[in-house]
Image (cartoon, rainbow over all chains, first blue to last red; front, side, top):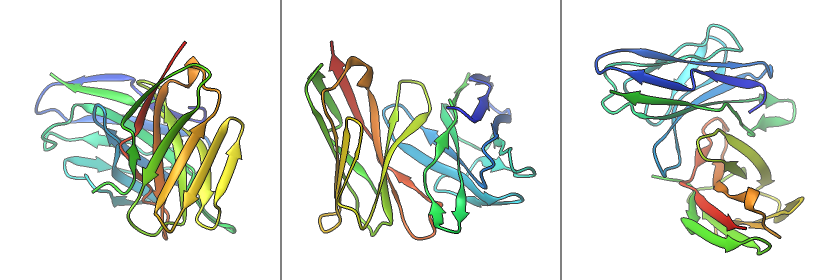
Length: 117
Length: 111
């Protein structure tokens, strides 16, 4: 998990509340990602950011929002519009584009488990 | 739909045996990666193989890629109880940012 941190580890939310999940990296990576993982499933991309002040919707962006005001930070807000937010959320980063091309290897944080009460 | 699909979904072996997991994908790729996830943790990158490579080794791991069949395999030799985890394949394509992950193979290595 080294170099990328997520907080909190566990988060409980009442229905109708917005919550924000933190993701910070000190790897000097340009690209950052948010994924959702449901039990026994793979990862689904929520949002990604290629560079600071820019982000793009992934496959399941509805009910989520992000910001990328600083290179090292990519917080995810789970809004009340997300119908079924209980899941394990993973943040990742990658170098992005270099002179040698795009570097795909992603480095993951330890995850945040969100439960809606 | 999933780009990468792992097979089998779950695999149980004895310590010391070899474990083979397969991944199939649907579209053209630049590279294919394998990741490992211990229960309740983030993913850890294991190995990346580029579309012009056929085989790659890293320690006890051997990855093959057959682009004509759109498939890859991950072999873990001489497995250990500590290898118990879920293993995911992930594919990258032109543009790179949308790496697509499969649903994973859950490996149980019994001591």
